[in-house]
Length: 438
Ligand code: NAD
Image 1 (cartoon, rainbow, N blue to C red):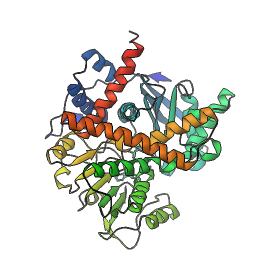
Image 2 (tube, protein in one colour):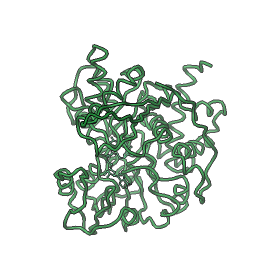
Image 3 (cartoon, rainbow, N blue to C red):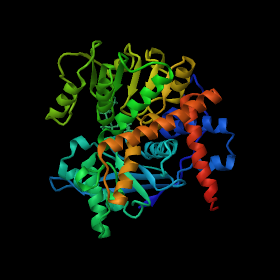
């Protein structure tokens, strides 16, 4: 296990230009933080602490391929902050995973947990790999070795991983089992997003999409509107995108377009989301894509983002809405299902154009909120019914959405800046109350 020094964060992005920061995901994330910090008049000493990750770990993961060869992949775990509790955040398996990206994701987790007032800090992990070309046996060996390499720094009171892009409940089961075997102690609370039969929570699989739906409904209510007949386009048809599309359609929205990494489909009369989900699930090839789904027009991912619609839900990966395409986006509400889908330059343009952005740290916080419920249930050994999970999720999200909305109104700032302001205040309160061990 080796640690590396923090990445040096930089200054503020201009609203109109694609800045050098947009090459660094962490740099972009810091831009958003800086804007909120300026509105809070944050002490420069505190700001210095909050713009450095607590710990970054890089590991080599040797694992055996099915043909007997040994491969070595690179993995990361970044624990950005422990001020409010154990680090918390997913594990990503994707060819694009870098230390910079994992650091940005751990940074966002810090503010996400704080904005919905959970007793967690922020963390994230990842392995640079393409899980779609690995067999289940290879994925299991890779996951167990990754878990074994970070075993000293994860645990219910240290750092609690969860699924992210390319990982799922089964991956979490392997992590939980590896830790329990090494520790000689049953440790369900070391990860969340587990299968139900080993201590997962009811409602966790749908939690992020459900939270996103609640956040959109809350925003529409503030504008005196409802979801009925709102036209929605969703980029990304994985866990977050597909569940969001399904729940929004159930509430009366018309899902005019959905897409995955291979392209999208469009039907202005509305896509049958459950049929599309069944089509993708039934696909037997490794792509598991919407490609070939009949009854809708084929479009590109770029076209999806620019569709005539009222609400756009980017629910795939970072940096999808940029200064290049922002001017062509027609939606007047953007609800960020993905982490970091909007670059700071594009964010400035949307703000000038009066587009309401429900920021990632609030819009997709439903997943970590139910992860918190799962962690609490594991620690109690007492499991809740799904209606109770959903009821408590709605309570947490509505209460904190209202706090963000009111702060945005009072201070005449965007919802993103208000969300960061609320989250930063909470983290700073914890930091100062504990005292700085320096
Ligand atoms: P997933 O792996 O289940 O799905 C990702 C989807 O995005 C897939 O449909 C994939 O084809 C698509 N995609 C990938 N690259 C793309 C590209 N270049 N263009 C268009 N589509 C692309 O992942 P997920 O869990 O749904 O996560 C999606 C996003 O939501 C990520 O940013 C993740 O960090 C964030 N998120 C997830 C959760 C969660 O609980 N799963 C919680 C909060 C935030």
